[in-house]
Amino acid sequence: MHKHHRALGLASAPSGSRGAAAIAKMRPVQPVTLLRPHAARRAARFFVEKFPGRSLYAVKANPSADLLRILWEEGVTHYDVASIGEVRLVHEVLPEAILCLMHPVKAEEAIAEAYFDHGVKTFSLDTIQELEKIVRATSKDGVAASDLNLLVRIRVSSDHAKLSLASKFGAEPSDVSSLLMAARQAADALGICFHVGSQAMTPAAFAEAMTLVRDAIIGAAVTVDIVDVGGGFPSSYPGMEPPPLETYFAVIHQAFEALPISYSAELWCEPGRALCAEYASVLVRVEKRRGDELYINDGAYGALFDAAHIGWRYPVRLIRDTQSHVRPMKFSFYGPTCDDLDRMAGPFELPSDVAWGDYIEIGMLGAYGCAMRTQFNGFGVVDSVVVEDEPMASLYGAKTPRRSNIVKF
Ligand SMILES: *Cc1c(COP(=O)(O)O)cnc(C)c1O
Image (tube, rainbow, N blue to C red):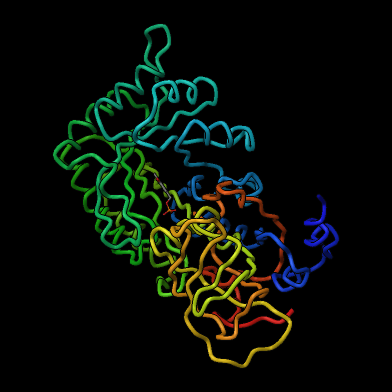
């Protein structure tokens, strides 16, 4: 029963400066999540210091309690939560955090619990019905709440993003004016928010969205107190290397300064991916090789959901004790479950002599990776260990290892 743990040997791992190679050397049987708190701290400090406004962490990217505490310690005080489950979780882990319920479609019961039990005052909406729901759910004895921050979510293009968020949420341009005027009546502070889509590859995405914010403010002729540019800040993946985040911040700052809003208006953003992508990677073992297909012990029902379902590419490197001098070649992966869907097309570039028993580190899985894991088919069990080496890619100035290379134990 304890055989796996002995084989993993993680309990006896040295606590001093160890990296992915030291963990691979222990030949773990199950996938191991390699956590890099220093990388998450660096990302949080970057946003806290350099974004020209307030940064809310979008919890759905990775709801790990350890990560929430790390971000809090580095100065992230506001959290973008989408469900009552996330509200309860963050309120429990960080009782003093300020929670903003930014899902534009909520159960009335969830709004009431968030407001009365967890002190949530900030809500987003994209219809009059949702506004009515919020007003009803936060009223007491027929008296409407007077401390609400209401953010109207407008629809913007996802054209510059790798993952669209354009079709599901966001008020139509023709409805925005009446919605802003109605929300103004119910709100203490009124805001406008949007989401340009995840992994926006150019700051122009934000510049274009800000022109729609400008049109909305002018069209409704209301006083706007908060402009929330949402998430979408990119991380670095193979074939998706974005410009520096500072250029995004500069474009947003410039557009914000040019808006017809009061001097005291606040600028917010809601990064998910950018705050946690570098926080975790997963160490997997190759259980079988068939030509250019590698059967590994994590997959579509584990941390590789996006790799399987939307063809997301992650950096990979081979970690083993013998040096390899062969050329790299392109591989696809099969995950451990029994169905054909559990396949990640990649391509993932690795030395051409990868073999059964080898270990591969798959990087940048801190956002929308570890958070997606299920127990399907009995394969969801993983170990987690803190490592101190650098992530496989970084937008925060870390000296990252060469991509697609081989690392010796
Ligand atoms: C998912 C989401 C985010 C985070 O998006 P990223 O692309 O991970 O930065 C922010 N705000 C809202 C409303 C979201 O749904």
